[in-house]
Structures are given as structure tokens and as C-alpha cells.
Length: 87
Image (cartoon, rainbow, N blue to C red; front, side):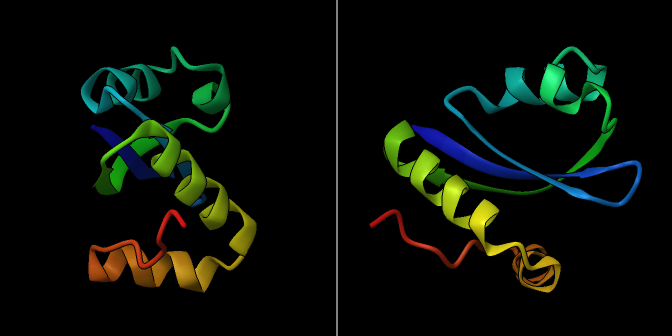
């Protein structure tokens, strides 16, 4: 199993990622042990969604990142569901 997740940073921005081990990855982000979020200072997990493979999760992660629409990401977080399919 794999996950796509959305974190909130201290500056109010979103960080979107994917992983096969959500618990470990989250701990690294929140401790500042991950280069990608060390400077952003991840604050909280807002949304997570499970996928059958890491490949599917990465496809969805990239689709979310390409959206570049803060309001669409906010709606996903509010609804608690990522509305994008891997294919």
C-alpha cells in the first residue's frame, strides 16, 4: 500500500507527498529531518489517502502538484478526499 498526503506548513502553505510508510515519513517531516520540508517547517497532516501501489500514489501526487490551485487543494482537505484518479 502507498499514500498521498497533504501537510500544512507554518507559513500556511501545503506540502504534497507520497510514500509507502506514512508513519515514518510523517515523523521525519514533523521533526525537520526531511530536506523537502525542513525549511518549510511542516506543522500538521491535513489529508491522507491510500492507493494500491506507490506508482499510483506518485501519479496522483504529481497531478495535485500540477493543479497550482490553492482553492482546489483546500476543498479536497475540507471534504477529506482526493478526487483524482491515478489513470
